[in-house]
Length: 176
Image 1 (cartoon, rainbow, N blue to C red):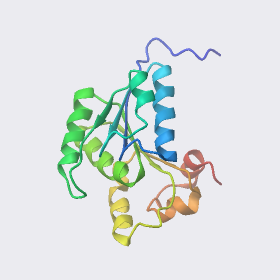
Image 2: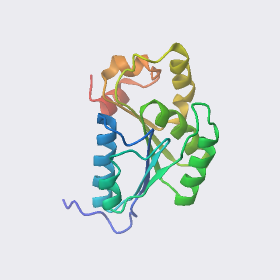
Image 3: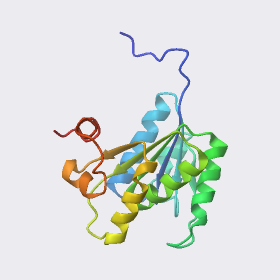
């Protein structure tokens, strides 16, 4: 069987959302995913909530736009509208969010923009999160189409993803 994409399938328009492209594991995952999707012919953009960060260069060199939303403060709710406008303008098929800020604002903006697929990635269990962060995660859970977690079933359930059935947990988390 050939790995070639059927002619009838168009490249996807994918947007990745994170707080920044600073030094960190999640940021490196985003860079590798974006570069890999671009190599496979997809239209990719990376959105940062705050500054672009020091590791945007490989993306920019590959022709991948990195767009800062220049979030002004922790409570800058206008970032959701600005992100949604970017998502609508680019007619994104998929929004893939990472880490707390990216997951929070990215989910809201993607639904505001009518993006059909929203993938949320939890990279770890954040010990800094106070109870209200978990409540917000649970409230926003229905806005996600899929969850990717690098922390196992127990961690995902603790983050508010109790409704995921066992098959979904196995497929997305690689656990039984």
